[in-house]
Amino acid sequence: MERVFISDKTLKQSGKQMPLSFREKIELSRLIDRLEVDALELPAIENKKVDPLLIKSISAAVKHAVVAVPVQLNADSVQLTWNALKEAPGARLQVSVPVSSVQMEYLFHLKPAALSARVVETIAECRKYTDQVELIAEDAFRGDRDFLVPLVQQAIAAGASHITFQEAAGVSLPEELRKELTEILDDVGASEKVIFGIDCSNELSLADACAVESVRCGIREVKAAAFALNCASLAHVVRVLALKGEKMDVNCQIRREEIRRVTGQIEALCRANLPAQRSFAADVQDQEGELRLSFHDSKESVLRSMEQLGYLLSTEDQEKVYQAFLNVAEKKGSISLKELDALVATEAMQVPPTYQVISYVFNSGNDIGAMAHMKLKYHDQTLDGISAGDGVIDAAFLALEKAIGRHFELDEFQIQAITEGREAMGETVVRLRSEGKLYSGRGLSTDIVGASIMAYVNALNKIVYEEEEE
Image (cartoon, rainbow, N blue to C red; front, side, top):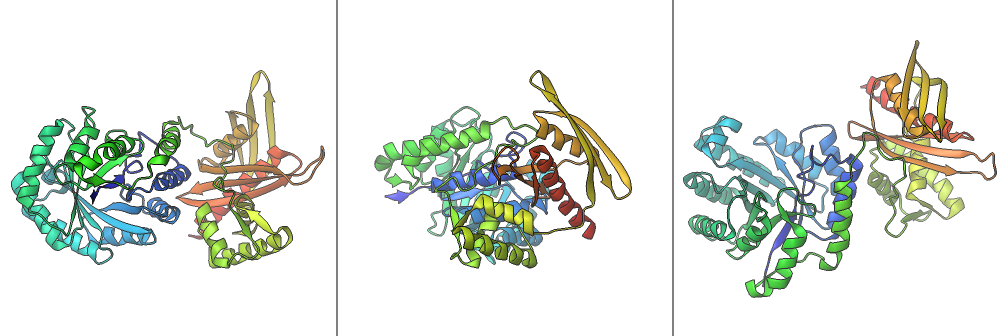
């Protein structure tokens, strides 16, 4: 039997339709990787500060899948993308181009011959870094066949390992698509050097059927999504291949026993109506087996765990956190990832307080909404912020944002008691994300709201200090 590869594009389709946070994208990549898909596709780099960090974080999070990222038709984009991608278990660079003459001139302002030359140059540049290079022929079935076929042949000669034909309109019936695809493959000619793939739009709700029909005429990679917005459904395609694969003499290696449970988790995560502020319920990073680090773990393991939490620390701060880890782990035997998170907040990047809390006032009750008034000192200025919120802490954080005039993604919020009794001391850890980078703050107080404000301002000061240094 021949193998059919499954490439998941759930994250690639995320955007305004599915505005996931940085943290949710990492969690989503882990869930998809648990299915042991062959490739995990990400969007191209747009924000040069945030997007490379996301790609690096996902590359560190996945264990099985090849991570695939599109590049622009120039050497700088190829190098930037590769630098973000190179630590992945497997890395694929994608060169995506339209094959209709109208789109060529509208999007690239190039004639067919010039565009072909740029594509070949880009593929050759990609091959300097990886042997997995993919040409994606956009809208292949409405394009000019006289341009498409030579382009594919030139891409193969330049070193492309994967060729994907995109059916962007989504209006083909399965048998129509199979007929056109067979003709294209015959014109291109057989090649053992490449894997041909298909990416079908679901405009007529036929993407799953078209994908399976494509397999019958020689396609060996299917683009699908665990949470499909307008493409083939991973779960449906895998189920058909499992039931009918023997008849077609093909199989795939997706973990079928995990699909229902994991795709349910993925769907819940993607369908969630995300509010402007992140939930204050702490997400447990070590939910799979309660991962803990012991005193005997290597320094590399501890640093890798910090990276998994999302931190990119300087060498000096890494050493501070590691020494603090040794001190705590020697006494306790082991610590959890949440405790490591608190150590990072305590030890790393301690800076002078640019913002200082002058006072805060809250108003809340069982029949009125929470209100907060924050007063801060910023250099020689006094800043005020007033806001309502879903609970006192939410109101406090929103009032802080009103005072400073900025919004940060709240990546995580932790609360725990560190002493016992009615006057127990509470510890909070707040993780803010700015330009894709994590900054954590820690607060201690018998007043848990006060501790939360201290932690937020502590993280805020780290962001401002680094910005002013730059």
